[in-house]
Image (cartoon, rainbow, N blue to C red):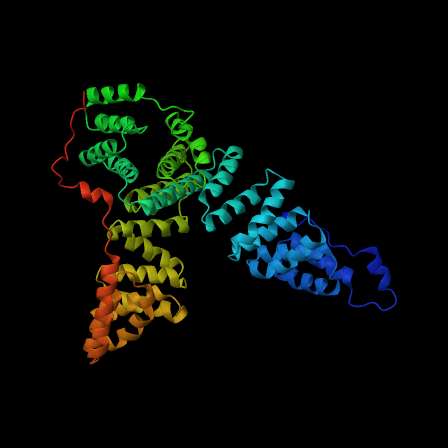
Length: 506
């Protein structure tokens, strides 16, 4: 957000100027003029102390508190910005910039619950304000209200239909709605027919058609006449090459349409009105409503992501697609999108850095390492970059090269725990267990699967500390067990006698 949004001219009230004629303090008007010039030039570090001094001398002047709060927010000091912005809102409750920046400051300082009211106030004053909608969407996301976040992103999309960031944000919000609905459904009954139906959808996407078919048939027996099952079975038939069976199942679907007066949500979904299905199921607690809510949200997410592919090629579009692939754990497609972005913006170090990470995640270390080495040569004081490079060297067993790189990085930034993890492992591999111990100990908070605890147990054992080694091994086993993925409903269909696709019943 640019400094041009600073709207209040810093001129002293006439009464103040007259009152100061008898005993003039430091020149208030001169300070106000200098502050205004600094703000307009974007020199926030110069403007802020001037504004702070003016706020002390003129505590009732709303414009000064407003400009101070905005300058603090724009300089990354959101927490400090809240007090002056609150004073500005108190002085003028309908002051749009004060409410906007107060909402932004609350979001950025980790208080999204307090951000909602001032941001909604902005939208009552200016319903098309994109900054308020964007911040409100972020607040709702942080408050785990993804449906309300999606509403804000949809409003932004209507004004900016070709913005890939908004498409992706809306898609992710709808995915969050679907996950929340599925979690609520599992909490009701993890082995319910409605859960089977949703798992069958996932299995169909994964091309595991026999397992999907079996779950659908089980659900049909448990929920006779439930809307939408015939359509789902038809999709499995068509995808697995049984077109005649698919046609028969679609015919059944046509002759068994639900009564829309009794089942309006099912009708809305089956008619493709997914937004209406979502609206009708807000606050839903029944299994059927949660099922339709999850399906509608998934469809809306798919539509948002599909819309990305209709946009003309651009750096932003490829970066958004790469981010989506990364979030799905698909490193190689993410790398390909980043390559396309880099082709449109050659030499962009941010993209090159992301590409190196994606290539490494895709196990393309022969491409990732030279790219990261080049970036580090261009920015030798970037400790985070050095830690990433050092981690790659460790994972490719280049310990002699990794140790000096990581040591220099940690000398500059001892707070980088992933660097301690990589250096500890490298030193242990080189046989220097004593030097490895303090680094592995510092890195333990980053250990999600127990592997660092195992490495530290080895280091303790080699340095003559068997009791500490024993304790580390016990913790390692505990973390390993916790890291095991839970069995999902689809696992129950593997290897069952009826796990083949059968023709439709007459």
